[in-house]
Amino acid sequence: MTEIIAILNQKGGCGKTTTAVNLAAALALLDRKVLVIDMDPQGNATTGLGIEKNEQNVTVYSILTGQNSLQEAIVKTEISSLDLVPSNISLSGAEIELSKTIGPHSILKESMDGVESSYDYIFIDVPPSLGLLTLNSIVASDSVIIPIQAEFYALEGMADLIRAMDLVETRLNSPSPIKGILLTLYDSRTRLGRDVYDNVKQYFGETENIFKTTIPRNVKLAEAPSHGKPCIVYDDECSGTLAYLKLADEIIKLEGVEDNK
Image 1 (cartoon, rainbow, N blue to C red):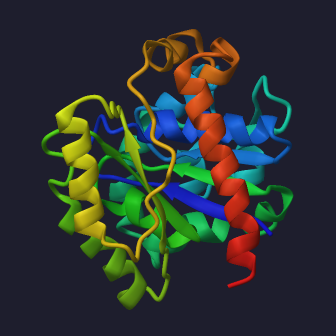
Image 2: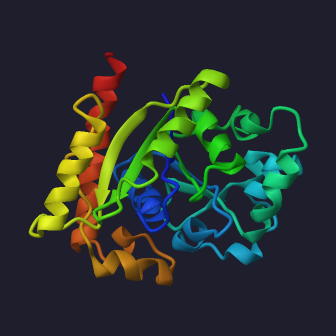
Image 3: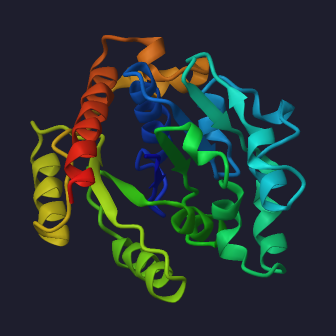
């Protein structure tokens, strides 16, 4: 069964796109069929998967505005079982147009009919905001992964994010439970890293799943997007690659657990 997962946090710089690209690539190389939907007007997930964003005429924008179907927007990446729905700066004007439509929060979800069954996982790279693009992403998803950077202001704004998710669940009748909290740019050797990890556990409590895997601060993860490659293709032995492979394995192991709930 397909699982649609939004990579979500309204804070920038916490590793959303890095996680969307590299987790998707890791799962694809572990024999899962994966689609990434780039919902960020910056188009960084598009670039990070080796697609020239400014050359794409059919993008998320054209899906949300009814010009094309989602199927028509899918492009192949260099990893055979990993596909992409690209984005570029044209998406920045979509929220104004969406606000004039009926049911603007569910357009992305409706566009997935007939497509989602072709994939094991669909990851949505969500922009760092709480606007209509983000609400569309939450409504379309089955669950969310929240990357949290191991830094002093890690949990700032988290109440607003949880409130937005609750709003989607209660008012739009579209629950998207937290699949996991992912600590990024993490260094267990530093006191700050350990303190942030403890704070995250205290904030979310034992009821939420905090991934056992943490993502380290790694220069190869930062370099890979400039080469248009996921880190697993750019350097298959670096600590960033190994961390995302470990996270992919952790998610695969959750498949059976969640199916039995």
